[in-house]
Image (cartoon, rainbow, N blue to C red):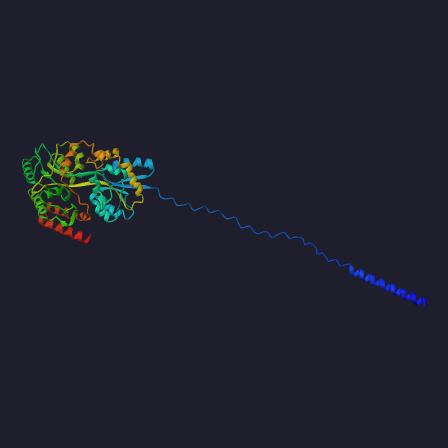
Amino acid sequence: MMKQRSLWTLFVVLLIASLLMGACAKATPTPTPIPPTPTPKPPTPTPKPPTPTPIPPTPTPQPPAAKLVIWADENRAPIMEEIAKAFTEKYGVEVEVQQVGFGDIRDQFKVAAPAGEGPDIIIGAHDWLGELVVNGLLAPVDLGAKKDKFLPSALQAFTYNSQLYGMPYLTENVAFFYNPDLVPEAPKTWSEVTKIAAELEKAGKVKQGYVLHQGDPYHFYPIMTAFGGYVFGKDKDGNYNPKDLGIDSPGSIAAAKWLDMMVKEGHLKPDVDWDTAHTMFEQGDAAMIITGPWALKRIRESGVHYKIAEIPDETADGHPFSGVHGFMISAFSENKLLAQTFLTEFVATEENMWKLFNADPRPSAFLPVREKIDDPDIAAFGLAGKNADPMPAIPEMSKVWEAWGNAITLIFQQQEDPETAFKNAAEQIRQAIAGGQ
C-alpha cells in the first residue's frame, strides 16, 4: 500500500514538472530571424549626354551703311561734291554725287526710282513737279525754320496741291543778248531783228545776224509770245488750263511763219546746236542771241562785248518762261530723313548757296544771298523776266515738249510748212494728254 502511494506521488510530481516545463517552453518566444543586411549595390550611373560641339551664334544681320546718292549736272556736281565731303565728315554717311546731264535727269529718274536704283536727291526744275508727284516719285520736303530764308514765289513754284516738294535755290529766265559793236541799240521788235540781221549779213560783218539753235521750244517761246502765241491758256485765278492748248493758235502759227521766213532767207541755219550758237556769238560771228544766265560765265570769259535787254515785241509783249531750280527727294529713298538733313543743314547755308551761285550765276532763291548780289547782268535778267510766264508745272506740260520741238525742227529743215507743222504738233499733244501717254 505504501509502495503504491509512493508511486502515485512520484507520478504526480513528474506530471506537474512536465506541465511546468511545457509552460516555460511556450513563454519563451521563438526569435524572428533577422535577414542579413544586403550589401548595397552601387547605383547605375546615369549616362552623361555627350558634350555638344558649340555652334557659333548666327550673326545678326547689320543694316547696310547709310548712303546718299545725288544726281547733278556738270555745273553743280563739283560744288555738291564739296558739300558732300563736309556732310560725310560730320555724320559718317557716304554721299556719292553722280553727274547726269540736266536734260536727262528727269527721264532717267522716272525709270530708275521705282526700280530702287535711282538717287536719293535730284537737282531739277520746278516744272517737272506735276509729272513726278502725280506718279508718286517725290517725297514732301519740310524746310522747318529755314523756310523763311527762301523767296516766297520760289517756294510756291515747288508747291503742288498745297504740299512743298522741293527746296529751291535759283530762279531763271532768258533775255536778249546783243553785241553793241555790231548793234548799237537793242531792237524793239522782231521785224527790226530781221532787218538788222539782213544788213549785217549783206555787209559781211557776221555769218548770222541772229542765231537760234534748232528744235528748242524753250528758247523759241519768247518769240512765240511776241506774236501772241502761248502754250496753255489760264483760268481766272491764273492757273494753267490744259484744255486750252495754244500751240496751233493764230499767234503761235504767226511765229512759226516768221521762223520759216528767217530760214528761207538764210538768216537762220539748220543743224546749229546750243554750243555752236553760243560760240558764234562769243566769236563775233553772230550779233544777237536769246540765252540765259547759265551762259553768262562763258560769254564773259570769251571777252566779247555784250549787253542784255528785254525780249523784243511784235504784235504782243514778248516774254520768256520763268523757272525755278531746286532739290527734290525721291519717294523711293530709304534715307529720306538724312536727305532732308543734308539739304537743310548743309546746302541751305549762306556759304554753300554762294558757292552754288558763283559756279552758275543766276538769281538766288535763298534770300541771304539774293539780297547781297550786286551784278548788273543779273539785274538785267530780272528786268527781262518781269512779265515772264511761270513754266507750267502741270503734268500735261510733259506731253508738250517733244511734239513742239519736232515742229520747230521740221521748219528749220524745211520738211514741212509752218502751219502744218504746228497744227500737227498740237494734235499730237492733245492726243497724248487725252490718252495719258
